[in-house]
Length: 171
Image (tube, rainbow, N blue to C red; front, top):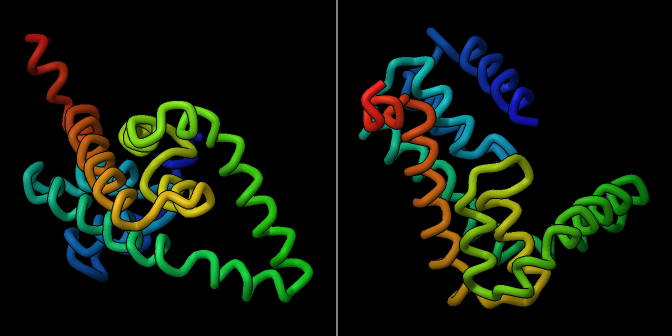
């Protein structure tokens, strides 16, 4: 899945490069589910965007859809269920998300925070928001947890994408 993220990110960078500003490219990539800021930070490095600027742009792009997911996903899914084909898609999304809910349920807010913060395929703000909604974790409680998780993921991806870990370790 990580190779897929890099491949899709590279294709999007190639598609948008020269057509829109670099900063807008990484913002758009950070908005996408699955890619989120993982893809945004990879794109930022590919496009030579300054680390601090990339950090804030990717965070903004990743966090922007979260309140909307928390507020409207049930209504959107209800509308989608009116179509037989889309109903199957919604059921699959919910089923895959609920498979990941065990740790969130076990560790409550800490579980949700770790789920969002660790930038692995299938985790992140989008899935965390969907899980929070499916588990009836209220917006007031889930949004700050997810926002902090996205911030931690951004820090991790900054270190990984910009090679700061090697600099810190003296390599």
